[in-house]
Length: 383
Image (cartoon, rainbow, N blue to C red; front, side, top):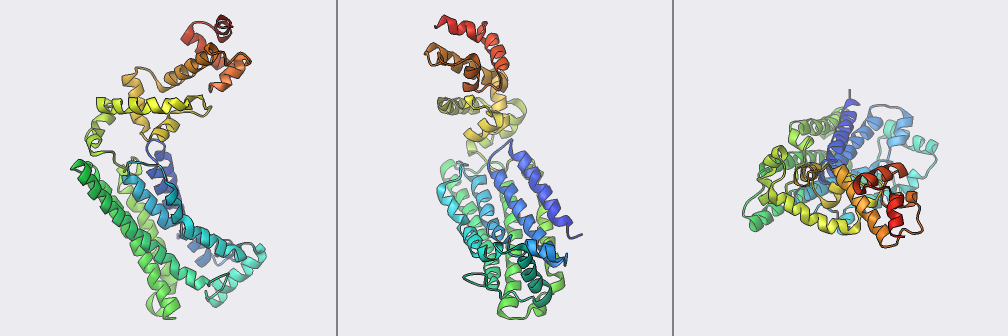
């Protein structure tokens, strides 16, 4: 029964990964957050319920760095759900520094032969239950006490950031986005559950490591079941927010947020299409369409718009599909290479590869459809 909790959460994270492709980067951080937190639950199960030395050796200490990734991922999610610029900045990587320290700290254990790991893990888990085990520069007991403090800190930071960002938007736009109340409710619930988990773990660590009275405050038998139940509630709560699970909770500028519902049903507003026009002018300067894997998802991620907005733009504003537009860009680029004499040493197949087509035949068909002649004939005109 306990095993259902982490696998259900991992399944939830894959749903978030899937729906992230249509919207923005913040969904990726939420998916990673759910994946890591439920892997931690899987670790609890392997250590405290299987009673199998093999799984104790697998999970003991090896997955400890994940505990120091959950907090930063929570903060990334909150930050990039409400930020206008969705790109991660270099200073954001400093939030992962504690996890790197834990990886270095764990090396004396993780580099041991597996049989030795099993021996140590089983002795501590099944025999002594004494976590005062010095791996490198401090003991495992100290690390287990720092872990919930780290998560608690990021819960507080995330809430403060969310509140400050709301104040900034009010100062700039004079109003908050139309889906602000939904965003606020969801983030408060998500962070609230993490606050409970971190405080619960902190109480356990305090009782065990400071008061040396583990059984007196929290029953050892039910401790991890209760903790697993908290993570299970986290996974279930997400399904109570279908717009979070299947949509993007991040909001655009208040001026655009009013038009979102109409845009999804009827197409983009003129203001949105004009904004896309402006974005494309700069974006096309780098000729991204020549990359073989270039598609609507890649383009949407690059210019920080949803695929649906871009699809509406091509279908209603330009009156062509994205695939047609992409081929037109590639054919125009090929013609430019030919006309400027940059393709004299290339074969037709070489030109097709340079402009992003996956095969020579597709290039020839698209070129003939657009220009009325095959590429070789067009090349002769400029020889």
